[in-house]
Image 1 (cartoon, one colour):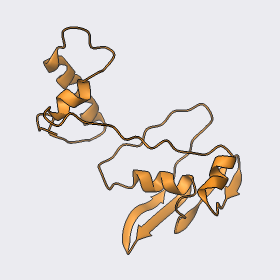
Image 2 (tube, one colour; image 1 turned 180 degrees about the horizontal axis):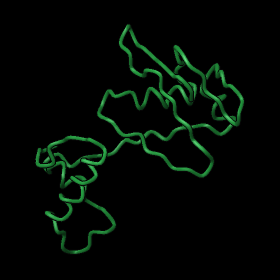
Image 3 (cartoon, one colour; image 1 turned 90 degrees about the vertical axis):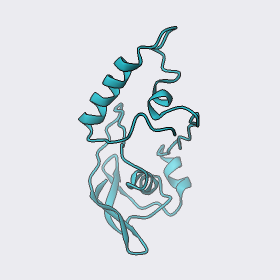
Image 4 (spheres, helix red, strand yellow; image 1 turned 90 degrees about the horizontal axis):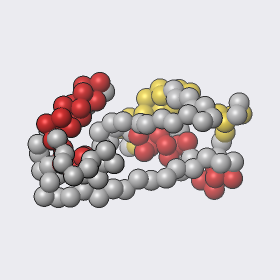
Length: 131
């Protein structure tokens, strides 16, 4: 993806985005709700068309007319919908079901680790808030 921009009704959702994916790599797009992550992926998969910029696959410029064309060449997206436990905190929801957790969970240790990741990505959320 090169110089991708997209607006809806005058509201810029993505501005001059460049994103390179290579075979075998795993990437994560992080951001708050409304940051444009899904819009970006919808352009990659042919659901939306970019207002500006180009999308390339194996060196060829793409111009999908509909999402099925993206699937034909192996480009697709799995939409992740996850459930939250409404009476638990953000922190508790994050650590719930993690494979490292055994019978006893050191919540202060987990909170410290999660805060480290949050700081690394400049991501701010109240871990003690009820979801």
